[in-house]
Amino acid sequence: MNVADVMTTDIDCCSPESTCKEAAMKMKELDVGAIPICENEKLVGIVTDRDLVIKGLANDLSTESAVSELIETNVVVSGTKDMSIEEAAKIMSKEQIRRLPIVENEKLVGMVSLGDLAVNNQSSEQAGEALKEISVPSEPNQ
Image (tube, rainbow, N blue to C red; front, side, top):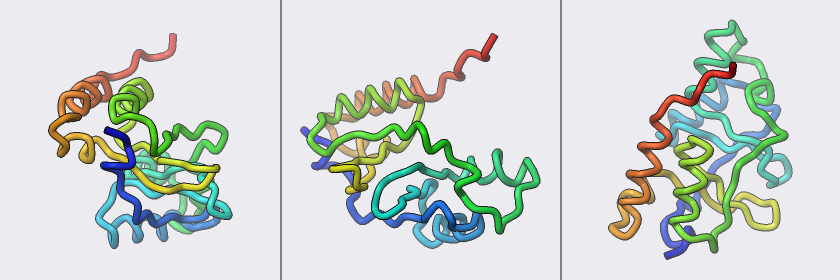
């Protein structure tokens, strides 16, 4: 089974210039925990609710600050819609992420989450393993 079979395709984005408040309001409106950041339809990052709190609010970042201040644009982990769900689960586990943007020709075409993998009987074991790996705290840099 491929990622295309389980991914969400109706994805809303913010631009790098969107404010933290706009991103948070979009998350609330869509009832999601992450918003992809796209520039001219190209995925340049992703902002999570945790980013808004830990990198933003806890560091006195204004709600009017651009979300570009919260994202690392040089490293965007993504997958392809023709990759297997096992491959997606391995990437999510290795990178310790709960959502994997799906890109085709540099354009965002979908998003797959651990929940998407877990609701599929064939992939629930991989999703469980990925969640276990994601939940293990990473080693502090020494």
